[in-house]
Length: 190
Ligand SMILES: [Zn+2]
Image (tube, rainbow, N blue to C red; front, side, top):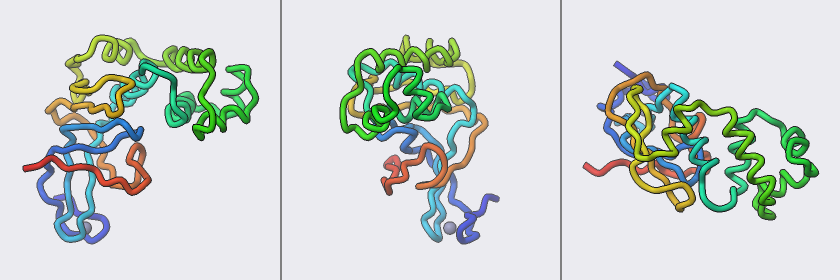
């Protein structure tokens, strides 16, 4: 039986609901979420395979409109590049990177395109295909399915398939992808 590591109480049965993921405008739907009945701690079971992460990255590089500061920081983290390295690759001063990531000025069109190309070159064919032809049901366990929303819209919901594939339980307000700004994940009703 799984116990809450904060208070030692058994978790309730997981219920599928929604959970913020990676970027402010992306939510996962149909995510197993367990709640500690004693202290209220919430944990979500995020698919541990790389395809979900890759698909989210691909959604960003295929979004309509200019990349936001949040997007640029996300893509730079995906590449594992320092601001200096990205600045060199794009042929701009490093101060521009900080300015773009802070949304102090919009990214240049050419730099926007160049950054997307750099990131797309790192993605698998599966990730590229999953976004280029949504909605897609991937045969892989827990592959994400684009259910609603499109890149460039204010909010994007990725619905996980029902199979119980390998996953990692992540805590609210901690761990990769969970919004650190105190945003409450929304639970499914019922
Ligand atoms: Zn607890």
